[in-house]
Length: 227
Image (cartoon, rainbow, N blue to C red):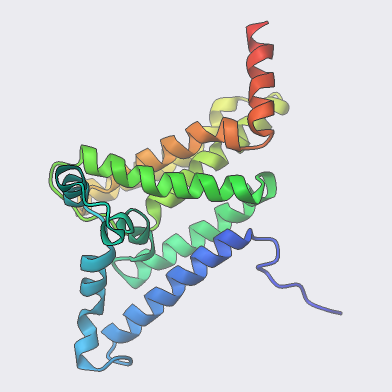
């Protein structure tokens, strides 16, 4: 009897993102343990954050100087692959695999890629516009929150179809934001919640067009609602 790979049911784009995050984090963790790279490698994480993380200063520089170089623009995406610690990356990987499997069952691959990319980039833009402390943004969580927006939409459609309370679809985002607020107040930390919420709003906002049924289904629902 041939065993099936656990990755077979997970969308390829999610697998690629997870493998990239895991590979980068493995290098960083081994360097901090002085297992790889020698003594100088202990500063690799800080160097990676400095080179690939995003901050409001990046957006200010692009707007003020018109600098559209690859080194500047890549930060709108690369920040999502660099994490602050092993645990930070591990939680991102676990959530990506769980939500990616669920959303991937309902979404087509191209739409899933578009919502992930849009959530990552536009959440960074929102962070640049809203954060006044020039806080560095790193980690896959704005992307994950975009996926949560897509998940929320899928659950909304399911509850509507089953005649259940549609607002229960927002339970997951409500719990996550409450937990994030609790840890933010009690333990402090970087104000990444603006990027996270922006990622959720973007993912949810794009779902009626990119999600199950696509643009055709969206127009059909609008016509039905107006009649």
